[in-house]
Length: 60
Image (cartoon, rainbow, N blue to C red; front, side):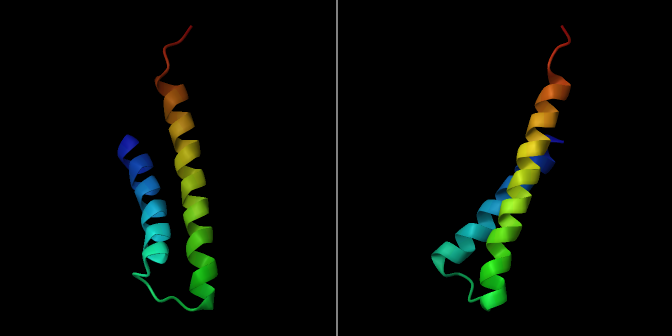
């Protein structure tokens, strides 16, 4: 499960980095969509991380 969380985080960072470095030449829709998608995926990664942390915490 940790691999999924890390993959989501890397996906979000890669999208933002691709825009920031000029690697992509997206349309106007792409300029809006890519950061929004990155934000949603980063939010999923954060939620997954918190859930994983809670699930692996010792009972008590």
